Image 1 (cartoon, rainbow, N blue to C red):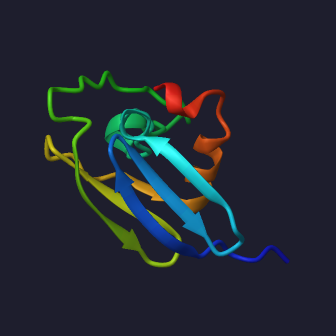
Image 2 (cartoon, one colour; image 1 turned 120 degrees about the horizontal axis):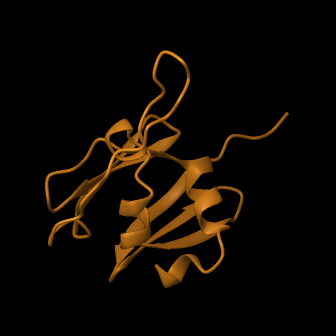
Image 3 (tube, helix red, strand yellow; image 1 turned 180 degrees about the vertical axis):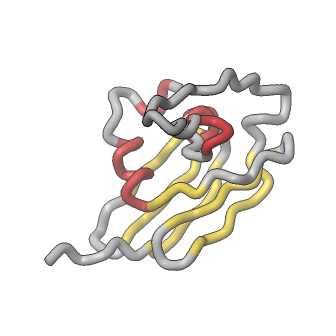
Length: 108
């Protein structure tokens, strides 16, 4: 059985978020990357009755990449609150780990 990830610490450092987990994993993700990867339906779309996902066009304004604060959600995710008022994305710990494994995550 897989042991659940437990967030030990999360902190905003400059233009990145740093996360450390109970298994020793540490990841650093740029704020612009996190915002562009927001998993909410308004950013990523949601399936229609036929299962097609129509991805909406998302325009990021001047404060879109300014992280105001974050909160943990249960024992599985964090919610990020952005300077332009957007805050509906719930980033699961496993999703954050997957984002960190993309090529050049700090280049966003």
